[in-house]
Each structure stands twice: as structure tokens, then as C-alpha cells.
Image (cartoon, rainbow, N blue to C red; front, side, top):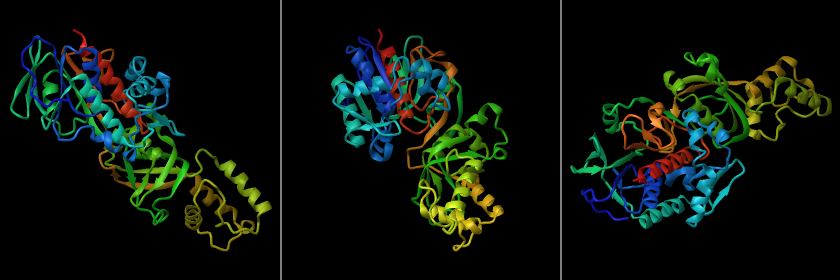
Length: 428
């Protein structure tokens, strides 16, 4: 990739991509490969490109998710599901896997469906993008952001942070979150609506003696839901999303893990409205019911009546967490199952499958969090990712009101939108 200022003459099509992240790189590479005669320039306001790719998945980069059914894939997006359903028929994880394979990068699948480069190193993905962009002739300008955007009858003028004013025939906004973005006003001036922004994919801050000192412990198949009274504005349509099942991690600040992050995504706006003060209920046994647990306890009374209740019972619950649950119900260390009062047993079951915790704030994981909200989706043609209001203006990535749950879904949305936009912009 060269770093020279693009030629301002119009003997060739000038395509500008704003934002050197996942969606921006994919759009730039696609456009340049599809139309080698075009001039494709990628603007990145910072000195670092693909920063979220770098830190994703703990530095391994969760590229996509092994889900090849567009309808099922789209169901993992709290916002954008309907629009992405059609878009995934044009570009989905199977296409992403093949795209990387053609460029020498093999992706592997983990048990939960997440896909990573077989090197377990996000730098592999970054190097792949830089090489592909360089080979396609994409011009990269780092340290140059877009301050404003003017639309003329047949082209745009880009007002750059460097002070330069550059013409472009087509432009793709792929800046990531519009939080504190100077482009918000420009997009609104062009007739676009910005849906309210709110953090998504965040951990819950909980200070509770039941989990104090247990940081690092996890339960692989737990269920977490919001207490209905916590959502004053929740609608019946949303209630089906209140419960999420999967791994829950106890942290020094509270709770994290896929189940928590997914819940934060589905209820991003509702939780923001509550100022991140709400109650949750955790079923440490996943989907087990009270009757199922009572049946297990009855067997323990019958066959292991002399065994202390504090002894580890469930393989899925770490010993220290089980001991803390037993302690929380007031059961003494030397109480055997045969002498456990029925009323106390009921309390124990409640702590196992309906333990209530008070959340007092949120914690985001460095820069891995996602922003819900952005450009209103009704204003975008998802067959081309072009604005319905402004011909020649395209969008990709987090600047749109699209966000997925954790597991590689946000990157897949970026690859899909970037691919569709890149092909559309490349057309003469």
C-alpha cells in the first residue's frame, strides 16, 4: 500500500473508504480487486489499523462463526437481524472461510462454533489484509481522518483532518462506532438518522459475599436472566430474550462470560435506560428445574445420607462455589444430607437455580466492546449497502445500527457489509 495523496483528476473512478478497521479493509480490498482501474484510498485517522482485529478473542481474532444457514446466522444479531438475513445470502461465513483460504490463511473451528486462524494469532489476519490490500493497489493514508463530507450532484468532497479537500466518486463510511464522531452531524445533514448509541457486550459489576474471593471460577452451562422489575420499559416482544444460557465467569468485579455478554447485547438499550443498576437471576445448573434438583437431592438423602452437604455434588459447579452456595443458605459444615431440613433444602435449591444478584454498573473489556446504535437501517439498501438518501454513499461495520452477540458475529457482519459495498462501489 502506498501512502501518497490520491490524484484528484477524474480520468478514473475514485473510491474513498473511511476507517481502517474490519469493514473498511474488506470493502477497500473488494473494490480494488473488482475494479483494478479504480483508485481506491483507505483513510485511517489513527496510526494503527485493524485495532479491534488485533485484540479480538484475546489476541487470537475470532474471525467468524461456523454457521452456514443465513436465517440462523441472522438470529444472533439483536439489531440488524432482518436486514442481514438477505445480506448473508450474498456473503456468509462459508465465503469468508474460502476468501481467507485463497490467501493462505486456514481457519479452525472450536467446540462452540467460533472460528480462529490456525496460528491462534490475530497478526495472521492483519498481515493477510495488508498483503491483499497492497497487492490490489489500495492506497493507505494513516493519521488522516474525515472531518466533514460534502455531496455534489455527481461526486463528493472529503474534508480531511490534514486540511486537504479531496474529490471522490464513491465513499464508504466504515469508521466503527459513531460515538464522539465528527461525522455524525455530516451524516445527519445528508439526511441520515442516527439511532441512539449504547454500549453492548459488557460485564456486570456485582459486589456480593456469595462470590467474593472466587474470581476466576466459571460454570460452563449456567443461565442468566433479568428480573422483570428491572426493565421498566421492556416490551413483551423483548421478553423472550431475557434469559441466556452458556458459560458464566466470576470476576473480581462481578460476572462476565458468554452468557453475560449475550444478555448485555440483547438488552443494551434497556440496561442503559436503567443506568446499569438492575437485578439478575442465575441458574447455576443451566436449565434444570426445581423438581429435577429435588429428585437428585432425594437420591442423596437415600443413598448418601451420611455425606456432608458441603461435599461436592454437581460436576458442573466448582467445589469452592458449591461450598459458598451451601454456606449462603446457612447450612453448617457438619450437616449430612439425612439431617437437612426440608425448608433449608428449598433455600438451597433456590440458591442453585434462582440466585438473585444486584448489578451496580458495567465493565467493558478494553476496546473489545461493541456499540449498539448508528445509522438507521431503513435508510440503507442492503443489496448494495448504499444510502437510500445519497447516491454514492455506502456504509459498512459498526457505524450502522447493527451488532451481534459474542462469537465472531460482529466481524462476520463487517465482512459481509464490506464485501457488498466494495462490489457495488467498484461498478463503473
